[in-house]
Image 1 (cartoon, rainbow, N blue to C red):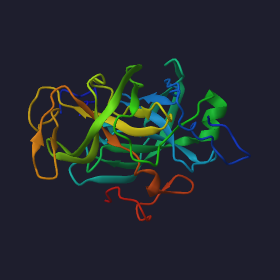
Image 2: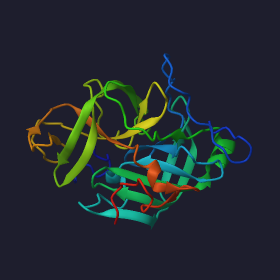
Image 3: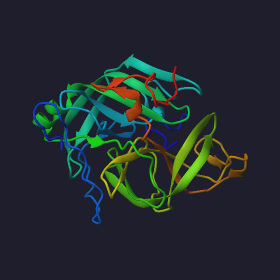
Image 4: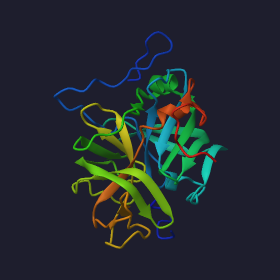
Amino acid sequence: MKKPLIGASCAALLLSGATALAGASPASAAPVAVTYAGTVALSNCSGSLVRLPNSTAADPALVLSNGHCLETGFPGPGQVLVNRSSSRSFTLLGASGGSLGTVRANKIVYGTMTDTDISIYQLTSTYASIQSRYGISPLTISPNHPTQGAAIKVVSGYWKRTYSCSIDGFAYRLKEGAWTWKDSVRYTSSCNTIGGTSGSPVIDTATGLVTAVNNTGNEDGERCTDNNPCEVDQNGNVTVRQGINYAEETYGIPACFAPGNRLDLTLAGCVLPRP
């Protein structure tokens, strides 16, 4: 994992009437301008204020980060947290990376390190209230699988640093220590992310949509150990890519949410692991 920095050594929101949220711009020849607006800094990681494609302005806002960034510690293999109380705070950033203020969670909606590495928090504020107070729109999670070769930016709210590269390909299985993730995004080498970038949104620059969440990289060339993930293909062959970093896809998240940003893991098409 791109370790949380504390304790790491230890292991447009534009309203359409009263309900609609503005979506991202359609893909075009010109890349979308990617800034820090809508990213957040956690105490030990990065994250982003996000909406689902069908979220409305009146819905409680959501923050996306990594499962290994949870304040409760790393979830064990097979462990899934759902609707746990939380009072975690996040520093909301503006376009240039300056702090606009603090938003606060009232629960961990979802968190796991099984098959994927994500945490989703529900805030005490709605998208509309955040827009009104801070002038900040959420980033939108794409419902589509990311594309090999797509230009991306990894935007770290913790470091206020942006990494630019492309999607090199996908790891059928990515194994790191006790955890295994499915269909992970592999970056080209210029996204040389570091500790504290965990949870950063991975933004497709053609659409402006969140397509993955940054989570790990092979630091020392070791094979399948902590901080040294390895790729495992369909036949069990192992590949180690020292210095290469990875993210977990997010396109499966929208299918698991009902109207009102309400998590429902029983919905048709939802494949996120269940408790």
